[in-house]
Length: 223
Image 1 (tube, rainbow, N blue to C red):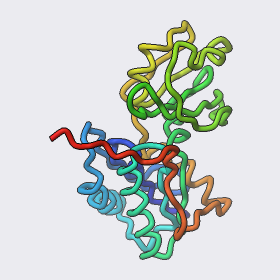
Image 2 (tube, rainbow, N blue to C red):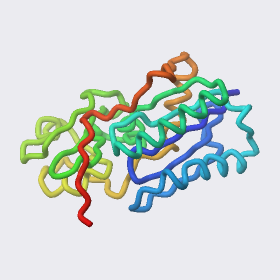
Image 3 (cartoon, helix red, strand yellow):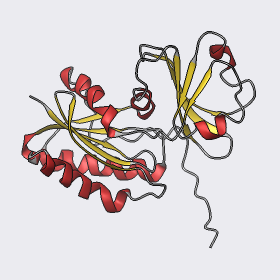
Image 4 (cartoon, rainbow, N blue to C red):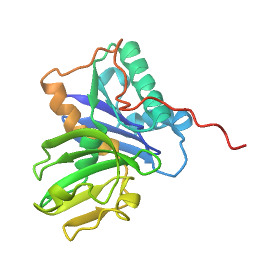
């Protein structure tokens, strides 16, 4: 019996799920527009554990959404996960953010483009087949009229994530299906983290870093 605490902070969604052998047994998230991870993450962790009547000493691992995504959000999530791993002597599992996001689509009939907004006309995206196998790894790309056209010619393509809003204004094709208002969630991490737990696919807690994909660029305040 494996209880795993799953943490997702790669976007504005502050999300925590407790899983038992890959099944969700506790869940809490706030997907409002503002970043609230620093204030709410540890509160949510405590609430999820209490709601399931599980103590920290019953946990077998901590799972973190590894990115790409918000630099600050990822840092907060990874720092919390590492702190728990050190304090409780637990292994750390990382789950690709875009892979978990793709799992929000039930019974897809074609490819999935899982995408997050990367400012301006750029997105972070990865492509999965109908069986949710990765067929193109994560890339940062500037959207153009030609983006994803090759795969769109082959089958229906589901676009999901907060990069969809600007993508649908540029990418036009009869096979394009845009799933809006979806953010990565800890709920879809549960099965993926358990699969890694079973095969002891753990990270080095001391040296693990989020998958930023691009270097952090500070934006001057407008105030």
